[in-house]
Image 1 (cartoon, rainbow, N blue to C red):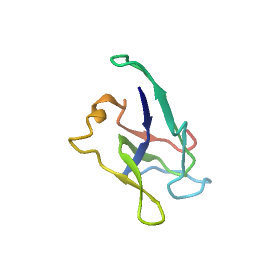
Image 2 (image 1 turned 90 degrees about the vertical axis):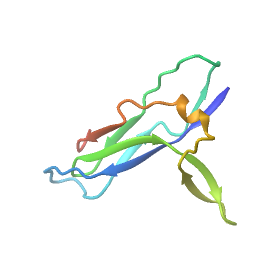
Image 3 (image 1 turned 135 degrees about the vertical axis):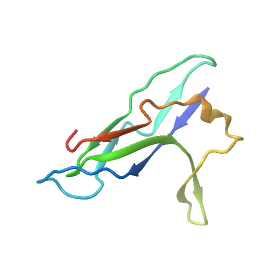
Image 4 (image 1 turned 135 degrees about the horizontal axis):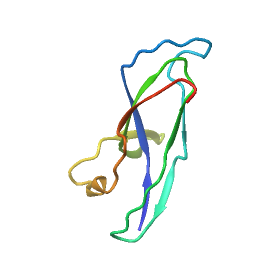
Length: 104
């Protein structure tokens, strides 16, 4: 079984004092995409890394969404999972929300 995972990052408001770094949301994620091969019933743990290169702390929320190309040009788009997407229960993130400090 092969599963391709895409993590979508969403912001929630966080304030912090910082200077000298550029302003605005500026994070690096690694590694993405992730291709996982496993056997049914086997548990696998993977580490995702996010580095905040911005000037202030950022609230990060990690979740699973569907990816598809849409329109006549194949524009990338993200969609929420539905009840039909049973594979959504196979993936768990811990923690699901955290604060990424500047430079970390």
